[in-house]
Length: 291
Ligand code: GUN
Image (cartoon, rainbow, N blue to C red):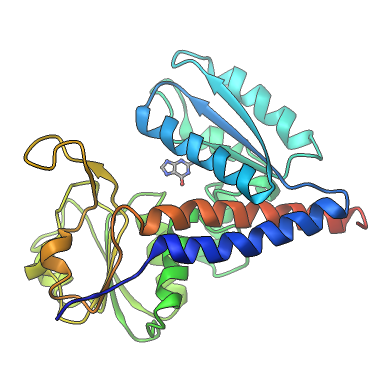
């Protein structure tokens, strides 16, 4: 069997077209959607992600504000900027790129972002709302994965879903979204005994481990939908310097029914959902002032 490829670039392009139309309509009503992005420190991957987010805003007609801070900045300086952005009615979304340097209390920073502008969905209140299946800003990567699953019409209710990874950014919210959709969800992680026992039972397998080509074809149930959230740069071997996912695409795509590639899979959808959340927030702000 050779898996169907779930093309994140194509899906993202379609959704971003709709988002750009909504952003243009809001701008015509006098409210241009605006996202503020804060980047602290020198993490090279974070710098690339932030650059891509700002560029995607521009393409969609969303204004972006970018604030860069040195690695040794005091948390109070970042908190002061967040207070200013929270109070600024022209700003609709606020994002602090993670990870933060070690002197930061990450939870405190995330909770300093206004719940109404938390377009990353990382504020404890939004996380709590998601866990109760109430309306909330959804974290962008797992939300993008749900859109990809929708795009291949996979039935979630009653499906066995296995998520590898328990991070606050991907694994845990992914498990909550799949649970809310009626899947039977197993969360695996570095302490899981006999990982393959679990993964081989999965109708839907989501890999968010951060280890290149970690999930191999022998760990995949024939016909499963495999979603690869990993973005790793290979350090050695013949493909040194190339990007690859957490899934060994060559072997897994021989077994799976559908699979996301890396690059061109989940990555473009993550940014797309960020743009969508920003437009949703701007729309609420416009309505609140009668525009
Ligand atoms: N770091 C890795 N992924 C993300 C994300 O989706 N949002 C933020 N703010 N930081 C991240």
